[in-house]
Amino acid sequence: MSDRDILKAAMESTPECLTAEQLESLLDGKHSHPHLAQCARCQAELAMLKSFEAGAPLPDEGAAVAWISAHLDRELEAIKNPARGRLSRPASQSSEPRESWLARAFGLGGMRWILPVAGLTAVAIAGAIMLRPEKAPDLQANAGGQAAIYRSLEIQAVSPVGDLQQVPRELQWHAVPGATAYKVVVMEIDHSVLWTSETKETLAGIPPLVGSKLLPGKPILWQVTALDAQGRVLGSSQVEKFISLSNSSQ
Image 1 (cartoon, rainbow, N blue to C red):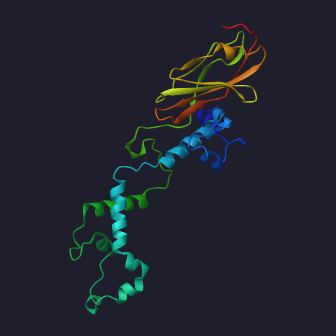
Image 2: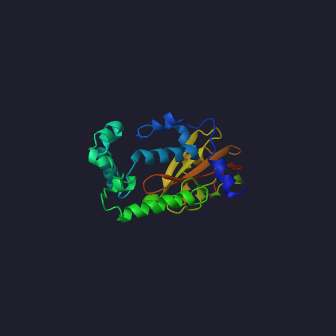
């Protein structure tokens, strides 16, 4: 199975997945939902919703918005009443050649042969967009100049997996670039949570009290989720399963 198929399967929606309204109710962090502990898709959806709600503006975005707002204010009367704007012009102006929209937009007046650098750049960009071949846009993980964050990566679990001769003492997995913490969840076969913990290492020791519940022949599930420094989900492992054939510890 290719990495694309594995990622698609991990992020596929299930009937138990939370709705948009349920995810929105969890934004304030005061409430939680047991489904989040074992669903990478819902964790990623909630993380992206929090990022969208935060809505930090990009550099120079404020200047662009201010320019657009000022220009609309100047043209408000003409926009609302285009016919009145034409009728109110003095007769001396009716015979003059009309200025192009580019000249009016940049306030060039009679100096039509001078174009600001910004105007030339805008024309060049518009031409490039119209002439370029149709294809899907490239996705950039570091939009806005921020550090790249790759969401929904799959963590490779190491152990325990499958049939074991003894009860495991710890859970192990491979490191994820950019992760500063890992959240581990141990569950019953019905996904009810037995134990959860958070660590900065790529392993987590299983407490003796939890180990005593890992009975011989009893299937146990576990999953690990990687978090960045802001607590955002970078990725999760598959839900792994193991069965201890003996109640003695390794």
